Amino acid sequence: MSEKPGSGRSGFDRRAFIAGAAGSALVPMTARAATQDASVSAAQDPALPVDVTLRVNGKDKRLHIDARTTVLDALREHLKLTGSKKGCDHGQCGACTVLIDDRRVVSCLTLALAAEGQEITTIEGLATDDHLHPMQQAFVDNDAFQCGYCTPGQIMSAVACVKEGHAGSEADIREYMSGNICRCAAYPNIVAAVKQAAPEIMKG
Amino acid sequence: MRPFSYQRATDPDLAVQALSAAAAANNPLTQAAAQPLAGGTTLIDLMKLDVMRPAALVDINPLASGWSAIESKGDGLRLGALAKMSDVAAHTEIQRNYPVIANSLNLAASAQLRNMATLGGNVMQRTRCSYFRDVSYENCNKRNPGSGCAAMDGVNRMHAVLGTSDQCIATYPGDFAQALIALDAMVEITGRSGTRNVPFADLHKAPGSTPDIETTLQPGELISAFSVPGRWPRSVYLKARDRQSYEFALSSAAVALDVQDGTIRDARVALGGVATVPWRAREAEALLKGQKFDDDLAQRVAAAAFADARGRQHNSFKIALGKRVVARALQQAVTMEVRS
Image 1 (spheres, rainbow over the protein chains, first blue to last red):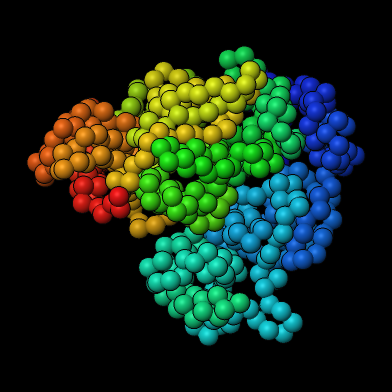
Image 2 (cartoon, each protein chain N blue to C red):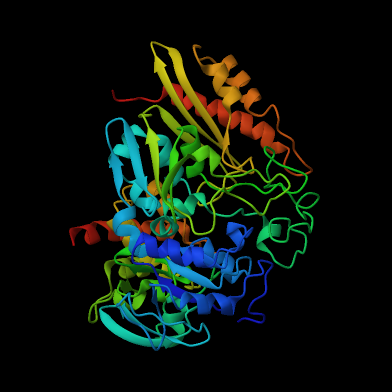
């Protein structure tokens, strides 16, 4: 949270900028003026929450949140989808990996506002009815975790890794799964799980 | 993270207008009150760390429809600044004709970050100097000009040995930029008065006495594209690092050669992980031109590339390592199979 709005050495006044932006022809995202009409504009007070609609696991979710909220925090704190994990919160560990428009990304460095209109898939969206996704089943079959904290991110990343065509060899799997850290070091079993699930996923 | 206003720019003029509105005179770009948001992998990270404190974010991702094309036109390449690292690395013509570009992108970051990060943002990424990234250290001339440099006599194993000054030894962390500078790339910059094209080599500024000024971009200007003349099928990017994947370079080399009948007609050598800015080793290139390759030549070229290097307490190993990386990259470029 902010202690000192307007601090920093630029001498630039934050309030002045916000007032100045009122006349621009951009699309400010505010609770009062979330509009696609670029000719309509209003000064945004960053202290006010914004309205955002996120499409998560096939369903539209309306949120009223701080503009600073990341996709990860929107999922965990506002939508109670706590499968995606917060490890480092700086894009280094991969525990928060989700799919956005079918591409794996780290949700901790993605602003919820910037993800509006895109399809977000989380670990909660993988299984169908009572059937685990093949990658989830492969992680169970291969004992591909110990504490389990990194596992949702590993699985989301692994699904994408296979679909990208990067699971053709163990070396490829290790290289293209390197963005997911497992401090229990279950790596050999993770590689085995990805190898097991890959043919089934590619079959569709 | 401090509060900010968020705006979505639906066309380039609006983006430039919004970014210019916040541009105060003599305001280094890195401190500008309005920052463009592309992939966010550097910006959001540094905002969480309170290193960057913009009052406004201008989301330029909607510009991707016009600014993310990958165009290979026989004798040249044009890359939109909002193209994602992963898409460029996977492009078959780039893999075939510019392997140094494909490799530099693929060996950087992780699959997730490469899906997010754009080419324009990639070259603008900030240093990984731990004293820069941790605001509890008062002394950082990049963050607080005139405050000193905690790295100079601190734990500086990861720091630069080329292009340093007595104000800053922070390493430029990227990989792609070394490929661009080696291949004489141009960068297209969009601003209030339209677009201008400048050599990529002129984009970054060595720290000198103003480490807070990192590029020649002005607030209100955006990188819109890169262009690369010619084709460089005989080219490699070699990256030495502390672990095999997902790590910044200790030392890297971008090498591109034009070899005909065993003679090196043209040679490009750029260095990463060892310099404060993307680093072209022209004196090394000069030794290669017109020569036939052998191990002795590789050693002399590598020595020339690091002739001006100056190590500090913990990073002198980079000079020895860097020479070996250059020699090995040359060897790989000479011996690689190139389909004509």
